[in-house]
Amino acid sequence: MLRPVLLDTSFLLRFLNEDDPLFKNADAYFQHLLGKDIAMYLSTIAIAEYCAGGKKDQLPFHHVKVLPFNIDHAERAGAFRAAFVGQRLEPGERSVITNDVKLFAQADVTPEIGHFLTADERCKAKYDRLVEAGLQPQFTILSLRTPLHEVLGQLDL
Image 1 (cartoon, rainbow, N blue to C red):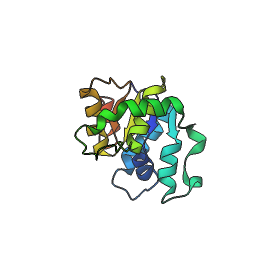
Image 2 (image 1 turned 30 degrees about the horizontal axis):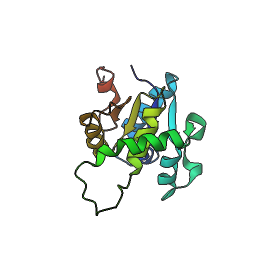
Image 3 (image 1 turned 120 degrees about the horizontal axis):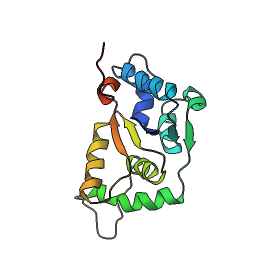
Image 4 (image 1 turned 60 degrees about the horizontal axis):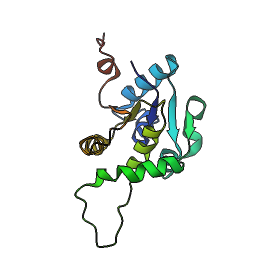
C-alpha cells in the first residue's frame, strides 16, 4: 500500500516529458496516486530545481500539495549530515547540504509522507547512508525505475 509521497525533481522531469524512457512509469505512479486519492507533495526546493530549466506553469500544482522548506526541515537536514560520511573538508569548513538531503528532511519531518519518489539512483545511496548512521528516516525510497505494478505486487497484463 502506498502512502503519501514527496515528488523529487527527477520525477517531474520524467513525468513532464513524454519522450523520456521513464515517462510511462512516472505517469503510472501519478495516475495511481491520483486515482487512489493519495497525497502528492511538491517541495519548494524541487520547484526551484525544476525552474532552473523549466517554467513553474508546467508543474501539476492542481494535483499536488506545495511543501515549503521550513525551520524544522532545516534542523533535520543538519542532523542528516551523516549522508556526507567520508566527505573531505578543509579545517573550519562546513558540509554543504545538498537539495536531496533537504528533501529527505522534509519527507522525514512531515508525518503523513511515507515515500520519496525519485528516478535518481544516487538518492538511494544517500538514503542508505542515513540508515547506516542510525538516523531512521521515517519514509522509504520509491524508485521510478521500478514499474508500479512491481511495487504493488501485481502482474503486468
